[in-house]
Length: 353
Image 1 (tube, helix red, strand yellow):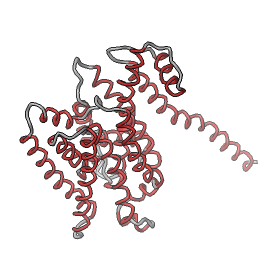
Image 2 (image 1 turned 90 degrees about the vertical axis):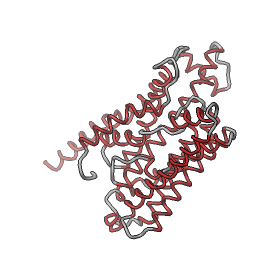
Image 3 (image 1 turned 180 degrees about the vertical axis):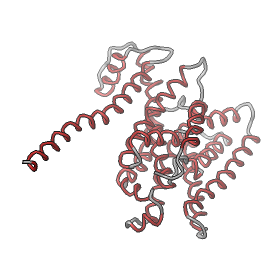
Image 4 (image 1 turned 60 degrees about the vertical axis):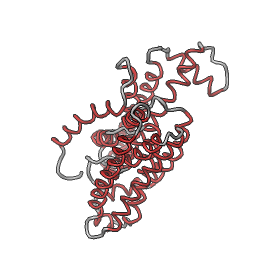
C-alpha cells in the first residue's frame, strides 16, 4: 500500500511545483515587458500605452495606425531605438559578465578585466580624433575591443609559469593601463572645442544617438557570441570548479576557456561599440542573478539576460527623465553599482560557491 501512495504523492508534489516554476519564469518576462512599455510611454511627451501598441502593431503589419503623427515619431524614431538598444546591450553585458565571473571563479570581476572596454574606448577615441564617420568610429571601437583581448590572451599564452587565470588577469591589468594612457594622450592632443567634448561624452556611455540600424548592425555579433554560451552552458559549471577539477571531469580547458572568452568578448565589444562605455552592468547584474537563482550557469545565464535588459532599460529611463539635461548612463550605473560593490566586498564569502 505504501508503494502505491508514494508515486501519487510525488505526482501531486510535482504538479503543485509546476505553477511555481511557471510563475518564476514568467514573472521576469512580465516585469521586462512592463518596463519596456513604461520606457516607451514616459518622457517629456507622454504617450498612452494604447497608442504604443497601435503604432508598433501597425508598423509590423504595414498598416496605418491612426495615431497622431507626433506620437508616432516619438515612439518609432526617438524612444524605440533607445529601448531596443538598452534591451540588447544590457542583456549582452550581463551575459558576458556572468561568463567572466564563472571562468575566473570570482563574483567581483567584470567584462572589463581583460581590457575589452579599454580597447574599444581607444578605437572610438582614435576615430573621433581623426574625425571619421560614426560607422567608422563604431567599427574601430569593435575592432579595438577584440584586439585588446587578443593581446591579453596572447600574453597569457606566452607566459606559462603561473596559473593561467591569474596570468590573464595580470595581463589584462597591464594592457588596460597602456590603453588608458593612449586614450589620455589622445585627449590631450584633441581639439578642446569639438573633439574633446565628443570623446568625453562617448566615454561616459549613452543611448541618445543609437538608431535601429546601429542595433541591427551589432545584433548578429551579439547573437553569435551568445550562441556558444547557451549551447555549452553546462560546461561552465565544470569550469567554475577549477582547472584541475574540470580536466578530471573531461573538459578540455585549453579549448573551452578561449571559446568562452572569445564569445563574451565579442558580445562586449559589439555592445560597447554603439553605446560607449557603460560600466558595472557586467559586475552587478550577474551577482544579483546568482543571489536569485543560484550559481548553476544553466539558470544563471537566462536570469542575467533578463535582469540585464530590464536594468539598462530602467537606468536609461532615469537618465533621460531625472533632470533637465540627459545624464550619461556611465554616471548612473556607477552611482548605483559602486555602493552595491562595497556591500558585496563586505559580505562576500571567501570561496567561490
